Image 1 (cartoon, rainbow, N blue to C red):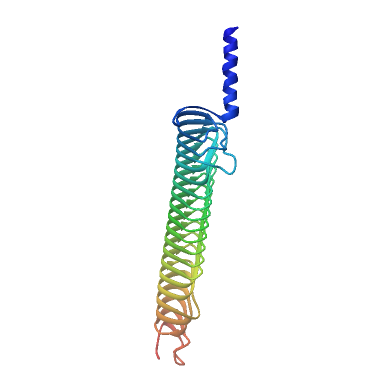
Image 2 (cartoon, rainbow, N blue to C red; image 1 turned 180 degrees about the vertical axis):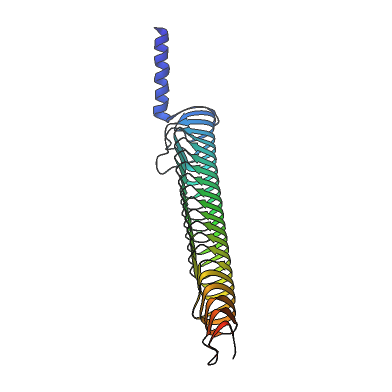
Length: 338
């Protein structure tokens, strides 16, 4: 009876402590082991769901995600069985289902289902299904299905299906279906079906279907179907079917190429076109070279047409509207005879 009575007393005291202090702290000056929703601990802290936690230096093990809004900072290991989180997580944050921070994560972040931060993620982060940040992601980030940020991405970024950013993406970005940025893309960009940017694309870009930018595409660009830019394409550009931009410079190869101002070498087996009042400087190889503006260079094809010829045409039929009467239409060869 005495032993039973003693056990009852011990358990009663244990629950009284939890009820009044919300935690059982086996600590000396804040260092040691804490069970429950303690505020500050250096060592090991175990709790079901955090509400009052301010700071943990060491290990914070939880069963469920914090009550909103999340409070407190974990410096060390945040372990979720299956969920964990905090306001700020510095070190390693791993949850069997997920892990996340109200503000920022610095270090290693991972969840078999998902992971994220309200603002920034810096370091190595992965989410089995998805990974996201409200602001910036820097380092190495992997989203099994999707990866996204409201701000910038810097480093190695991979999205199993898609990858997207509201700001700029700098580094290596790979999306199983597509890569997209509201700002600029810098570096190596690979999208299974598409790569796109609201601003500029700089570097090496590869896609099976299309690549496009609201401003310019510059560098080495390879697309299975088409490449387009709102203002300029510059560099080495290869597309299966077509490409177009108001200004194009460099080496371009596609079934059809169109521009207002072109400088460089164009290989367009089907059709090369310069719009009215435009200008062509360079060399073009195409079945039909149609220069509705000024040609200052060489066109080689079956049919060559130029409104204002200041260069040379070589082909089966060559038409230069600016030449004197009798020299406007010539077989095999035409040039500026003014």
